[in-house]
Image (tube, rainbow, N blue to C red):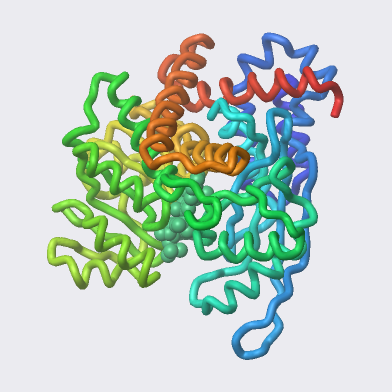
Length: 444
Ligand code: NDP
């Protein structure tokens, strides 16, 4: 068996019942075959792939907290410090009932390549809990966050590991987590990103992932002879990434016509009203039925369905494996010519293959949603300098980073004879830098 096949088999055998982690490793290693084969003996002798797929450290802990009825609740807490070859671990915290070790490992593994692609000095990590902030009072969320950080603070620090937000972790949660870190460690340092503007946060961090997704999409389209202006866009999700993707798409002259949450989806042929969506999701934390109730042009549908509408570009911005083979076929039939991932691994392997075989431009999340972590790294720089940059300065840097990321993957795909295969391009470009740094640092 080839070295790649040996390692893939090892990952499945050693990490049972972690299908998302298997899927992420398979997607990356399959597209690295051509690079590995060039130097197979050396990589094998140094067990480079085995080290790449094995986290440097996995921290799992109990998170006890008391709910509003006085009942003690217990959740699982995780932090996976995956790879620090190119910088301190960096990656978000996810609070969602679906969280388990396999999901955090898949996200931490992906994060290593994503962070490498940003060209900034940040390693890969991810964490979270099966705690569900939905329906909890602010006091309950605070109690949970304080208990979570009481344990996590032993393992993180501004030069060690810098977590950020992800699904279920927004400004409110980051504030509670930061407050508890400071209280226990007696350190006012940039240990978390996505902080509020009054205590070390960066302008444009909230918008960064969605805006960055659109900057990359704009460049992808431009390099393929199209203009983002005038395109109809289907977006899934109605959280941080989706909201700011919708807003930037409109600013660039495109028309986003859908959004969704875990109960249903909206089709608004006149274009999503961003201000209304923000009010409902960011302020009221309500369901999308409320959007339809206030917007005559909008139709609300229960369940899944955003990929069934007519569109030119699709931006999946909700969660992993939300776009399957049937969705991919439906997008093709409806005239979609580009799928650019805002979420992490929202497209299944079969759907990705179908899109690529059918001539649809496809960009993986580890490249196209890297604007969030890139701006987090800019927040770390500002914290180290004890300075705050203007919105325009951060936004301009973000734009430059996203355009560069696209050209990095485009160049890598061309160099290895796979022009237009941006999945391979992203994996190869991300891998080469990490592998080089790992080789230079010896067997650690
Ligand atoms: P949010 O929690 O702000 O929003 C997530 C959205 O997706 C919500 O509308 C949520 O609906 C929906 N959703 C979540 N899980 C499911 C599910 N199982 N089925 C259907 N809908 C679901 O998260 P973000 O916007 O921050 O993150 C979205 C994706 O982007 C994730 O994959 C995340 O890892 C990725 N990402 C985020 C970054 C960031 O900076 N925030 C950076 C890079 C990647 P509901 O509210 O009903 O649960």
